[in-house]
Image (cartoon, rainbow, N blue to C red; front, top):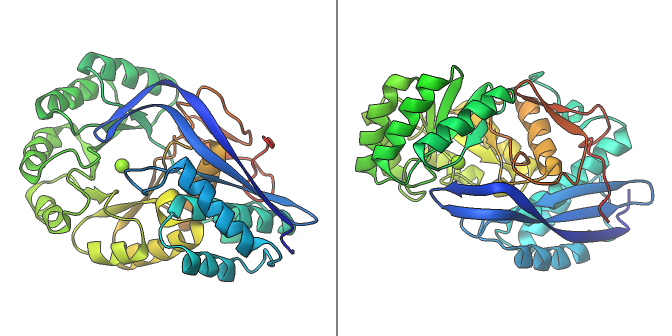
Length: 348
Ligand SMILES: [Mg+2]
């Protein structure tokens, strides 16, 4: 399984509508698709860089790939653990670029074994509902958006909050009055501790599943205070990238959001999941804005660890889908039976 070639291609896909959250607004998705080939098969990966979360840009991902290519060529793709260690020694951080390599190596492994990745990792759950996201807008727009997503099959809504406390309380109240599905909220670090306590106490009555990252990522001790002060379970997202972060958060939050773009791929994410489970924390597998390629990797991983929740709707707002092989059906992402990630469509 000697690696013979490593190529990449930048993609830019406009969004159906602007994606507004407490961290900012974006209008299009820019990522990089990676293709690693042996003589027999090609494996694919995706990097969705984020300046404010992983500290990466499309340019930095491409620089990382130039460095990684020198390490990858000539290596045995079946020695993925050793390869990832080499990448980590060569370059710290740059987690979405590393995730792309990790996905491509797992895709190759699946193709070699003629098995879907989830079967190689070992399936723990057959399916897990994914939430669909209601972004920040006027209360009226949020309700309209929520109703539309439920009509399209959402069994769980993730409502973005974190900019305006009064409007957020009103938003959750009105959505709860209009839809009959599970609701979770995500403030993307938007509140101070004081505001977070106030808003979460106000919306407790609307049966909120959990609240994701209500306060800034570095405020770990404040997360513990928040958890004590409110009834809604608290989930860390931007506070948790690596297994060391999971250890730091034990006892301070109820749950963590593992995103493969933050962890640097499935290999590190498996270690994070092990620590979280041992500590009695619940696990959600989340995503950035990604094509079905990255989301398929997240779905294989989530089913294999038996994640408590998934939030894998990153492809939902893309105006075009460059890849096939995974479909949203009745609230779930359904994987194809094809080997590896099961994704089809060669953009190279
Ligand atoms: Mg989040």
